[in-house]
Amino acid sequence: MTTTTTLAQVYREHPIHLRDIIPLDFNSIRSVPDSHVWPISDDFSSDHQLMVPIIDLEDPNAVKLAGHACETWGAFQVINHGIHLNLLEEVESEARRLFSLPTQTKMKALREPAGATGYGLARISPFFPKCMWHEGFTIMDSPTDHARALWPTDNARFW
View (cartoon, rainbow, N blue to C red):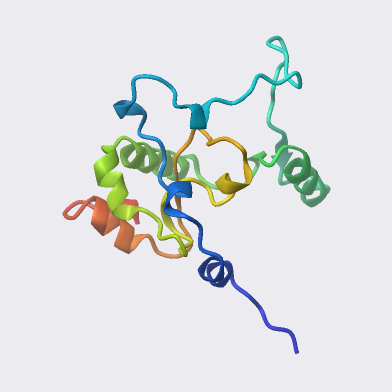
């Protein structure tokens, strides 16, 4: 008999330190802290063009191509996914609304150390020697509670 473990269960069993969740507030700093200064890499030259792989879901090899993109890049762009442009625009608008909030407001939806959802740095952040220059918001299921914390009276659009 095999047991299925959910991502949420793994996160509960392996909490991360709060310092690995809270993003840097770029509006409150005057210079880049050492924690965010990455060494210069010889892997990329200034004239090197970086292009994230594009996966066409109509391609019969899409699954194989997506796997390769994940292994080599860690990310990819999807085309021919069938999602209407107006829905994508609404999602982008809500993402802009979320990330334009003041840091103090976003912190109301901070992901718990053993949690899987909410505001904060990616869970992979502790595996790197320096902090990444990003912030994120993970949604797995309904974002209702986080939306209410961020927008007590105007949260329905976010769900």
